[in-house]
Length: 119
Length: 119
View 1 (cartoon, chains in turn blue, cyan):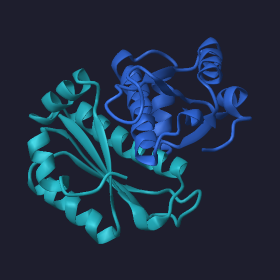
View 2: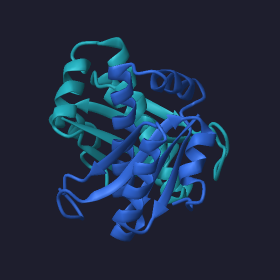
View 3: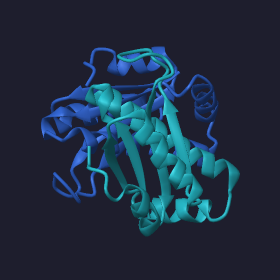
């Protein structure tokens, strides 16, 4: 099991900003699943937590690339989230900064993000 | 309400690595509270989620500084977590990489981390 967070590298965010956006995505994915207990997502979440919650952070260079990957993941039946920044610092309010996929089985997630480079 | 994540800047982690460690801290804090429903932590968590889960990422330059801040936060009655890396990439297994405080009231958290610089 793993979770992959896709970050927009074209926004020139600082590393603290990136970290807070990625954390927002991870928390959103986990809480959404924990609150709705939907099969198989809740089983994937439990396994992922037992495995030490592995996360991979990768990058794309545009909003379009990000939304395309997240849409494909949703169509494949994976948990997804998109994070729009509140815009308190560095970038405009409502900017799409990153998206999260998972937790889910490695082979399903690799089909969507396996070719993306690590941030 | 806010959550503050304190990152060790002396480890020279890359920005993707930092983001995954910070996300680990945020998920751990949130799940620990969601699973135990302890007062006032669960009320703080609900308020923080309603406010858009604001997070601040700050830095320290040693393991000692990190553990001192987290210990003080725990003594003040705030939710805390310490993250030890699994060591799959970049750093040695078991290395303490970051710590999280909150979600909690701004004035309580500022007493502990208000003087630390943003990452």
